[in-house]
View 1 (cartoon, helix red, strand yellow):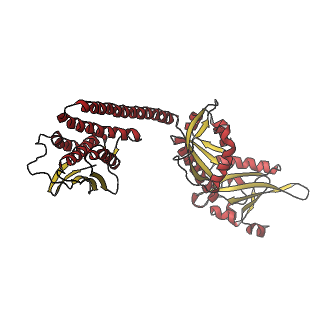
View 2: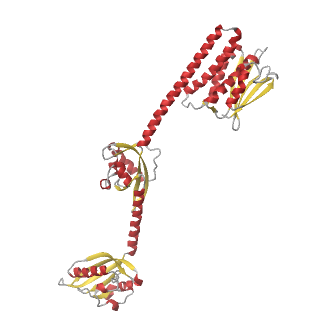
Length: 457
């Protein structure tokens, strides 16, 4: 029997039915640094393995009595080891009957489970920290296993859904969604677990969740795969977006109202300018010849301003004017209205910009009036004694600004003519328009005249 005991991997002792230790193998003795004579003949519960804990001694004495009555006793216990260390054991005490079914000995056996216990404690600590993180999350959070069952929720989710933990934990996640989503959700859930990855809330389809009273509310859901207890789970964070959607809808309605109002304003302003232009045209028919040209010039200025409001009314963005589109239409208007009366004067537009510059409506008005004044002045005064002529409006991109040029091949602007210091209303307006545009004007005189206006779009 002694040879058998020594060859066992477990720690083993043999007792009399009254608990007196008869034999113990080398592993059991080495655990506490004992010799067989230190324990042989002593009551089992009085041996050094147990004397550190009176409660454990009482339990062991009771277990001996139960084993002597034929019961097998098994439990995880902590014993004293070498150097007063504490060692966790999986302990069993079993009766050993003879051929007549009389219990003649008791066999005590144990295996060291310290590493397993330490791992279980670490796992419990990890799970406790995980639960604390989930519970401390400000958003409504649920942990769901691969079968779609809810295994953990926090207080925020209870409040959001007006449902308790006892109702939700163990239920499927389908319980949180309206019935119309449930059939498709199963396939989506399996697809997620086939290739789990973090998925944020941005760009997701519109989703709705279900409260205990049957009411629905819009939500966004973020998914993060985690491993809990060696198994795949997903952390679902659920955000109620009712307030945001309400605010967004209100903002969209306000924006639509303001857009409609702004479009109506530009439409009415354009129409009113058209009425003014028509009145000027009517006045021009009956005015003195000396006043007809001034009325025509005023009519052209009104039409240049009206063109801006027409573009704003056509565009979805009323904050800027596409300068290239505006100048193309303005040049066509000037050619048709002014150039046609002095045929064959050609009015052309050239763009040297890679990207179309833009202006706010407040600065687009002086820009349009400036081009109108320079072009009409060139058509009327630059080609005396000439059969043909050409006026080119050109826009070029500089580093941080653009250069708007009005260039004619006429007789040239006399040195005596100073911008802003003439009797011509148009030339008197030019300096004020330059200031409103925040630009700088330079003039090149000679064989023809070139006006360069540099400004920041």
